[in-house]
Length: 85
Image (cartoon, rainbow, N blue to C red; front, side, top):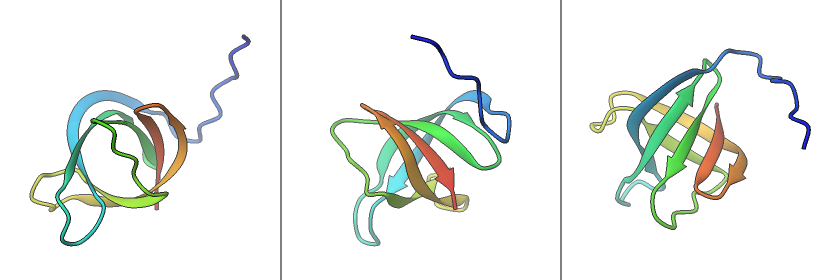
């Protein structure tokens, strides 16, 4: 298979950082792992059999002081490519 050139607008920074997916106001937060991030999006790995909806809130701090509204742009098993809205 021929690999496509990187078409991202912003360079991604690799990291290994815990974050949390929020599906609803009174629902528990779901752990995920950020594996890289840029100004416009990130790659995350979800835990368990969680299937987030097309749009959700990502908490970058457990208390919710840093959060991003996100949209899923691709999915490969437990790995998700997300765009920050």
